[in-house]
Image 1 (cartoon, rainbow, N blue to C red):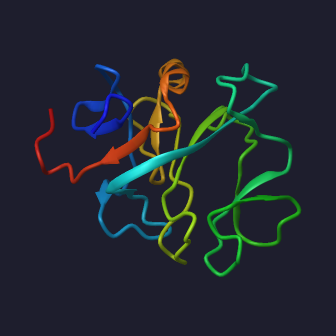
Image 2 (image 1 turned 180 degrees about the vertical axis):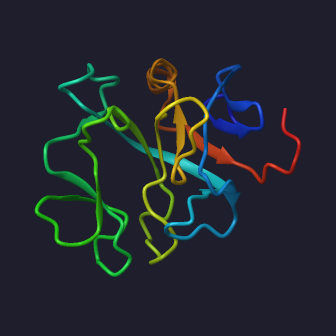
Length: 171
């Protein structure tokens, strides 16, 4: 592990010398992640991108990309664009990235099940804003808005999200 890594622990996410409170998937952590199970996948996941809502927040880093009207994320296991950003109109199952709520005002993308996508293995493992304190996600890792913004300002292209089996004590 390096100082640039974000490491999930029972105390929160350890990053840059402190613990950041967070929530994970309603299904806990899993070594056998699959679409719709609500689990956060165990493993070492590179941060491969950052998206933000330019109508709601300032660009957090020079490498962040804006979320535009019509930006979607495919979660249709049977489609060739599964676990990819797609554009509306899109006839298959998807998640809207430009939401009415603030959940995706800032999103850090991980390389979970990407670029070599395996159908049914799960899609869209993001770091994003939490709905409310303690409320689980569908598999993502979620933070308070101000914490997510601070984390986004400190990550680097070498940063990784490390999700261990949480039965193992971590420090």
